[in-house]
Every structure is written in C-alpha cells, then in structure tokens.
Length: 109
Picture 1 (cartoon, rainbow, N blue to C red):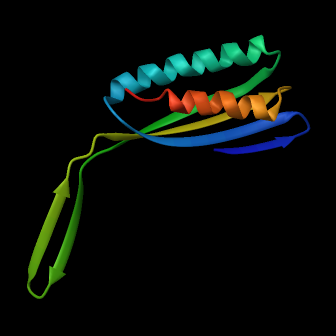
Picture 2: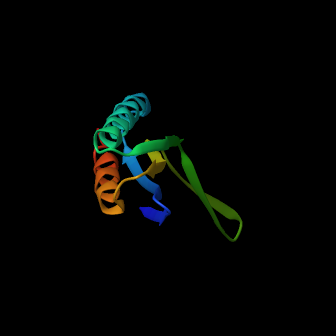
C-alpha cells in the first residue's frame, strides 16, 4: 500500500491478488467501497474518490526450446488483481491506512 498526504488530502493505492470467482469479487468490492465511503463520512472526512480496478488473470503458457523441440507448460489460473485507489480529505493518514488495509484484507472468498 502506498500513501501520500499533502495539505489534508490523502491519496492511497493498494494492490492484492485474490483467488476466487470474479463476479463474487466484484460484488465484494462494491460492498467494501460503500462501507469505506460510509466510514470516511462517519469519521468526518470527505471522499474525493474511491476506485477499484479488477483484472482477471487467465491461462498462461511457458514455452521453452532446447534444440529442435519446444516444451509447453500451460497453467489455468483463476486469480484477480484488486487495485484500489482513493483520495480522501480531512482524515488522519494512519486511520486511512488501517481502514484501507482492512478493505484489501476482506477481498477474499
């Protein structure tokens, strides 16, 4: 997680790789974003924005050649990158860091 504070404006970014159903993770992200926005308002802060980017990772192949034969190793992954970006005003950086860590920590099925 990366945090930056300047003149009362905190920008935060965090990334987590999660295994699980993409649609269920999307629903979880919606719930977590709504809860984070409610928390900020309850604490007296202002939400500049909260964005979450989900990127599903699919199959991957490794191809190796020694001589004239190519060996292919293929894997099927069901992992999703969860990338959070938020701008929050008028709240303590430490509080925001703890709350965003909770957000990312709950992104698991």
